[in-house]
Image (cartoon, rainbow, N blue to C red):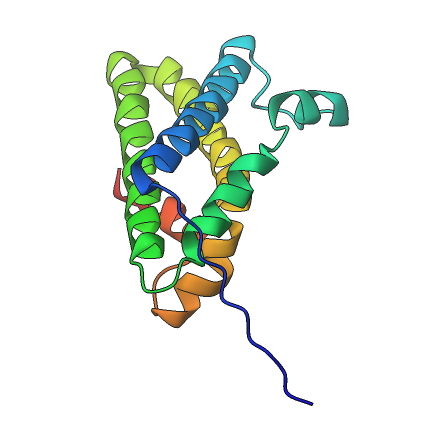
Length: 155
């Protein structure tokens, strides 16, 4: 008996799919900013708050997976670069908040801002999970969570 290998040809436009993912990233960022403004980043979130804030957009996870499995494409590399770019943009916004603060307010703002950034990284890592599990090890790149933390240290 011969086993057949099926190749799934998916016709997806990278830029259109990325716009959907970028909107999801913006929503996650806005949710963390809302938590910071409400003063909820210094404590652990309740399960209800967590689910309300980070309901994972499974459709976007599926889109990212589909982009990664397209045969002979450099989509995973582009996704990795766009993820780093999105984190860098978020970091630049964070730095603007910190530039205005002074003394004790600076320390409080610093703690709040970095807690928000870490809350932002966790669902991002889950959103790009397939990329992190397969593309990153095959290409000897830094895992997404670690890359996000490295950006944090550089800022």
